[in-house]
Image 1 (cartoon, rainbow, N blue to C red):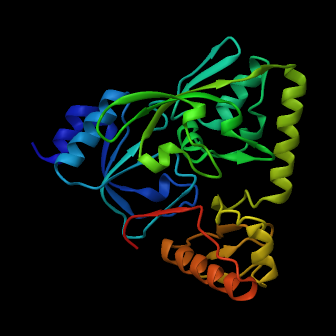
Image 2 (tube, one colour):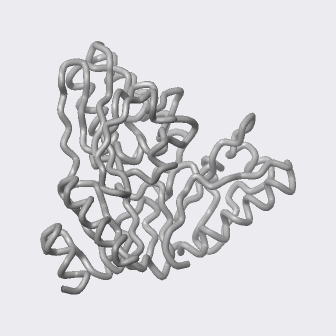
Length: 301
């Protein structure tokens, strides 16, 4: 069998696409075609796809809903494995929530609110999946995943499934053992506290209003473009370098929040990449601080 046939045999023909534009699978709304785009529905399928790719020396990359991703204009030569809508079930179990890696954080927060469980409100507006959030210890408004994570079930590159308690996850600022060891998150258990539904919903509404007020949600972006340098705020450094509204093509440093690079419409990955490089260069020139990208770049530029 050829690779397409083998992928179909594993995940089902309806879950394997060829030459799939990645612009439809990233929040930047940018990206050329992936050779193969597969949406598995269980851990065994993910394991078999990765095993197949490793054996044939074919590049692969695991994505959620592409909220932290910039894919090159010429696309991705290999297999994109998307853990999203086919693996997004959420279960409330007492004071805990168990959810598959493809569950959107907004859906997890909504389920917690409905069950009168508090602690995950901070994540209600983060446009990513639970798997991605665990991998990078996502956080916002004073909260982060390490505060609520109880365990994460992961798949190792060798095909072993492990359940790791939070204290062994090595979770720090935008990092964890998952990213360091290239594990794939399959599901996670969050340990929450009892609260009142009205108060939880009010907190979520408050954070939503803050996002709408301060962030350029009307444009495609990947959220915070650069990691926060210790002792500084990336957006403030970019603003102080005189880069508010700075453009390369149709990619722009947001006029609303300098920590965001936005797609004004029709921006290319090359536009965004060039803009990011120039922003980092000018910030280092004016402040001496090196900005490191939070956005992950993959594919051919």
